[in-house]
Length: 287
Image 1 (cartoon, rainbow, N blue to C red):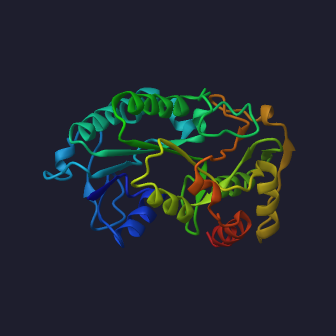
Image 2: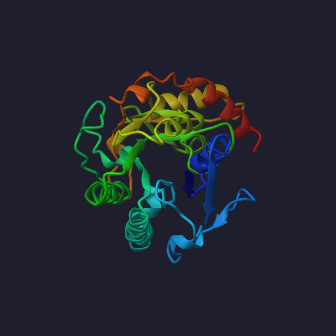
């Protein structure tokens, strides 16, 4: 059995590749940012799966992490986002299924509308924005096309190095601007990416179909901002507002909290958010 990570140069992909490489035969792909000399160039928009390897066998596993992931950018570039996140992802899934391989798809809490205190695996998705709608479209497509799959949903992920799509960094950078506003009732979790990778590994051969991976702790945007301000050496400030006062290009869920009924994810000992926030702020202060 071999494991193919499509999108191994991203936040989760890099850590997952390193982790799985210790136990399995793993092949990682990249598109624009290589990150690792062993990664294979693969452009989902134009390349056939055979470019990765011409000897893919039945029983191999494909973990799909590649996608446009910035909801704001996606809202402004829906045609381009649709091409990658829906059309070409479906084409990739069709090729994987034809080769009788397993599909593990990374989805998102954004498939939900944020109108409950938390969401479990059996809750019906109802996305508010195009990013969430694209993720849900692929979830439905996979479930229609094959039984050999796992859909993993997660919220914010972070680690102790700098990345663009990290809620700690995004909040920190917002606090450097004048008139920063932070919602008191926008709740989410921040999962250490190492925990996410550990749970993914535990589900490589899982028969579960949908699994939520999410830190059990939760935090509001305003409390996160307060912690960043406390830990930073810089002069940062903000106003506390209601979520409805934050202007988004498309609607964004007020509550982005996942809970899991999966035994592994439910009982996992996730790392504390506070330590990660503190370490990240120290790094950001040096930039």
